[in-house]
Length: 558
Image 1 (tube, rainbow, N blue to C red):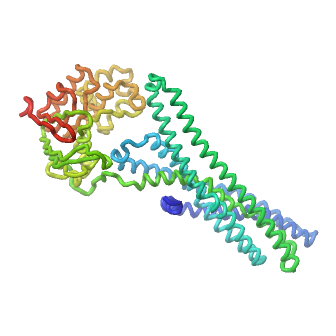
Image 2: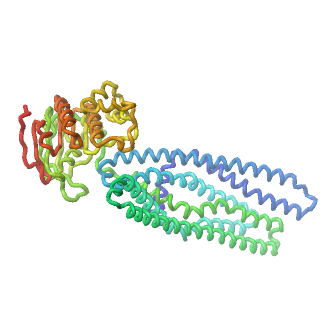
Image 3: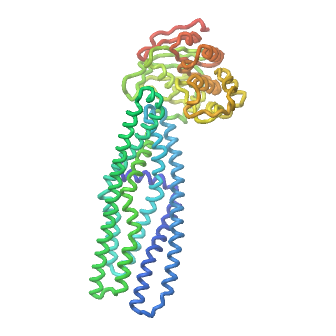
């Protein structure tokens, strides 16, 4: 994404705050006028004394005091407006980012570096504060102030005004032209490296037990240091660029100050301006570089922000692989009809190939087969986490691609192999399935999942906090809580992927009995490698190579 297009996209996000932005620019311009007036008034006072040593400086002194006070008030007002804009926009951008992530999951986020995503959501979004609080209004302020100062200089002599305008343009744009492209590239690389480092740290933290077990801690630390050093080199390079930018600005200010001195000396020698005007012009020029000097430093200071902005906007503009349907028909309970269904991840090796399957309602369908044959993928397609590469999936004779997505998800409940629990209480983790669930409903669901007795044995019962990712519970306990969620959701279609893989025989028997009891007026699809588990199904199919290898009814049928 080119810098100009990127900046335009970032500015568009700020358009709803144009009123506050206009207020910040107005206060900023008045503030710089007040600040620049202080040395200029001092030069005017000195000029008065040069022309008439008996002149009173009372008016000049009063004006100096007023300008000094105004400068403080106006600067505060400008910064308050800018930061209000920035933090308001950051909240809106975070909302947009989470909205984009919700639309992209799971198809577009499968396999992505989670640490890099966390870095984007936190660090990259936070860096945008530099743009919205310290970039947009300062650029506008610099432009307006430059025109005002150049006009004032032109009122003394047109050559003075022209030189002032040339000096402002040079200071504002020359460092950006010389340093900006390299700084933008380095900033993007720095943010990418920072995101990857975050992902590496997160991955290392989660796998700390495996690293300890196999004695890989020293090797991992060595890799961490190498990544840190690489990021440090980029940050060091950025600091050098910032120093170069500052040096260019200072050199230009000195050179243009010298040029103004020579010009004023020539005009004074020709009798075109007097001594007091010479003093005002030179002092005025040197005291009015503040606005443009601030924008010149953006060439490096903004580079990391632009890198962050590019990553965030790329996420916001990314098209989901599966679009949510909001203007279709609501899902209805009935047969699942899969016709010539094929699917491949990222257009690579097909996982499902021309699969045809009818899933009858009010029955349990058991699915078995070797790993990688497409069992779990089939469930994800039924949930419409992905769309088929070819073929169709219809529910009650209605294609899922024209079915309102939210109504489909309301009709379905899914328990995957890994149960995700949040750092909250057990009750709140259950309420994810049904926010308004009563205590009786939660208890009934947990009894079906054979987890209620364990929960009430805990000191805080259902209010017991769960550690991040459910690490305070065993794999079997997490799995039973996942099943309790599914029972609490009370959906007409229950999709279960190895729901008892982490359970002992006693717990498995209790859970399977609850699943069988739930099949009345429900469709249950059960994936398992265990023959005993699939013995409860009304129909069993065996998959291999992305196709159905065999299908048979069991004694449970009919």
